[in-house]
Image (cartoon, rainbow, N blue to C red; front, top):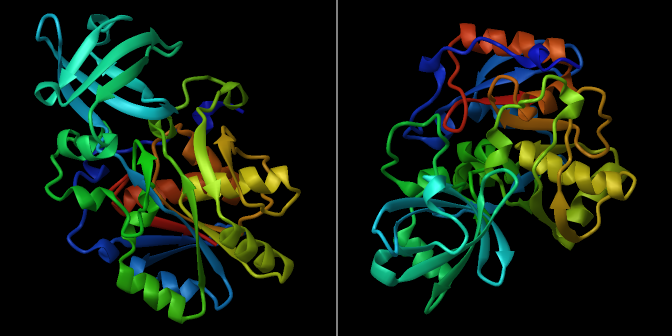
Length: 342
């Protein structure tokens, strides 16, 4: 498939630069994934499309304050380090700016020496593997020195860092928020649960590669990045019972979708409690084994995420929906409006 099939015109003014004051006040474009029929609703109308017995699966990963500003130990030159993935033993895969100043052996100092890192190697994609040195608890130091790594298309500062976290974020590890979940408040989740909808949680630590456009010309040639996930025994049990009884499983966000489908493919349509890495690439032609519906935001042109939603609802339907969303001036990306494929 040609990547250009997933391209569309997106005026820059539609890229949401800040979150709405009320998490639940965004708009909701609802699509019947079989017919492509669209309905313009409010996010608070989501509950009208959920049935008692549905299982709503949410990603409880918490975004790390992963952006660190430091200085080269020898010259004092300013260096920015963005944490991408923990490799264990205080080693991290990172992005570094300016990269040309950080070669293997380079030491970078943060917070006057509270935290240090040594560059160990350069990755194939131009990142850096670094090893941190510190006294105390790493994540407490990171909370003190780090800032939220907002996506590059957001140019305004975020006043409240918690607005780039879901209200149910628990497990630290993401380099970016699972943004479909940003629309929920604790009160609205309680309201949904009171209707008889079961809430289940998985963890997938989001990497920045999620948001990068596909650079290959042919969809099938794209290579996905890998991300760490965990599925609890409780979630596996809830999802398996729903599938066995013909009840719907609805993923909140493409990260939840990719986690569920990774595990479902491994175990022939069932889940097991497990943890591991996934680089699953979902595009048209993919047959879903777990999810029946998806709540998501509006994504970048030519991104793997547009391809994923096209796999669920059809490429023509999705492109029509995106053209409609642009015409109706829906807000796009992390702080934007939501779309329900059901």
